[in-house]
Image (cartoon, rainbow, N blue to C red; front, side, top):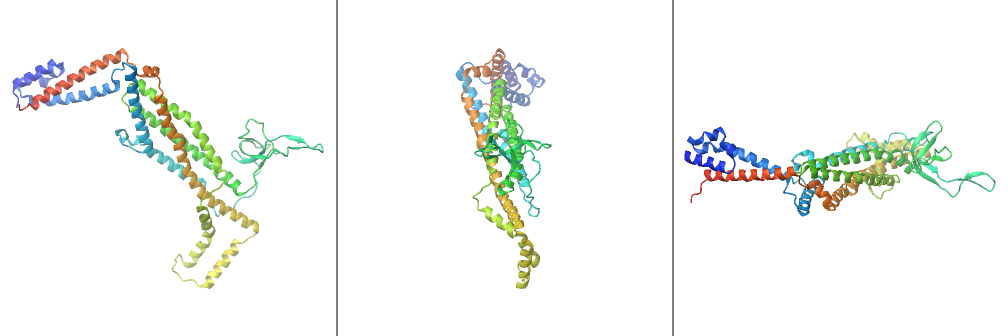
Length: 435
């Protein structure tokens, strides 16, 4: 145990390194008559708190920005940290204490948004096999309907009659506005033209492709846009969290946040174009997926399977007579057989149901992948490229030290040296060398 003389010696040494504040503490000032071990816990605890605070403040200030090389090295160090956290959030590689906060786990939050998107697509893609398929032509167009429009000129034929130019084909377009009283429409591809009256547009015939497009695929756009907007919102929030977590000058923090937000905004238009292209592709139904035939067979046989289950009491091991089977099959096919027109409608209905089951799953897979390849990954690349091309002039603006920074740096550096010296003295008293 140290003597009061050792305690007085420690007090003198603390004063010598500029730590008068500790010498003036009541616990220390009264320590000339007590062993040093009773005094040091208070000093040790306070010096460690002060050391941590001092180091944090110095980390934010960084080393003095005296040359362009130092400024660029500091800038790229912070950019590297920012990109590491952005890429970690996107990939789900949460190997940084930054991700201890679950709000910073971007991939998990994107996964939740994608699940909601999947549920929304499935909901609007259900084809009710029991509902009648309306094959009639509506009387008035609705916004969002696909129609055929005449995009040519009226010409005079040999008989002097005004007719449509026979060399111009009707073109598929989508209604954007409707004047219900006159049945005039405006369409997406030719929105600058005047309103089209009933002689310049017509409804699509109720065929497989047109029904798929008009009644189902067109409804995918809203959930798709909702997913994109959620993705954009989560990315913007995540960028703000990442830049806000970095220990750097406030001007640099604001600059990096501004650059990343600008990149997201500039890429959003191109991403939306790609999403709309995919919707347009889906408006022309096609697939090579063999699952289509399997689903169609399941839908065709489902009513018969239900009747067989009733006959067997839902027990596949039940023995059923051949006569009962024949009667059931005869009754089933009698019920299923109506006019040729009814059969065609029923087959069309089944085909639409089978196709939507396959196409909706394809779409649910494609959209998140497209967002990743056309929006998220290009964003990371754009931030990296923009950072590497940052000029010395910009770095001088966001990293140049002002007079207050220089003074604060000197004050904190001196404080850090004094605190480290105090710890060295305390450790020497607590753990004296045996030699």
